[in-house]
Length: 272
Image 1 (cartoon, rainbow, N blue to C red):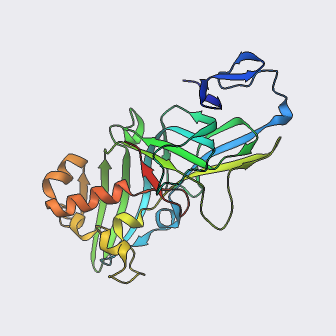
Image 2: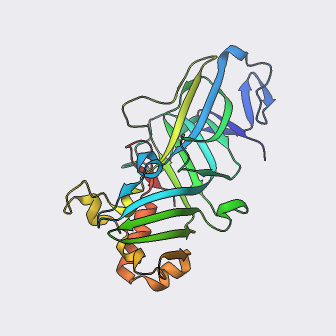
């Protein structure tokens, strides 16, 4: 499937077409009527942050390390949105320009470097919103799941190797990246980046924060998962998590997974 560039003029959406006096088709490349100097290179990335790459200590004291954390991402789209999208108030992103990588791509968030979903040629401008879907991978190490976490957890003299498969399709709508650096400014002939950020401390909690902190209050931790292990091994899928966790723990886990998607520290809306 080709990458798709959607440009909007006013309220009209023209998928795969640019209106420049005449209609010119686009299919992952730009028509010759657009000068090369008006485009740049846009990187679509996915970041599990240091919690994934370096490991974390859960709210209940388990040292969790990831060998791999696979995430299957589809239809990742960078938007030049006007007005700017606010995930707390807006129901939809209103785009003047959209640059989409439509294919499903499985990335490893535990790899040493921030994962690259795609690198695309794109019109210069300010990309101030991003959207993507979590879909079940059709092949590879995450086949059948939206997320697969592989690693080990230790507490005291107990060590558990785990492989946890999650299949929870979701669609995120997110605004501007919030962080120490600004992202999404693409100059003509330059390079810019937009990022899908995943906050796995929302699932496991953070021992460095007080137990009363909102993040820890809403996180599952690792202890309920450890209770499902057979000896020193936990290999489990979403359906078994639903049947074997308590109803309250499963709902906590599901809500935490829904809340994974961010843009840096910026929040996202779940598309309905």
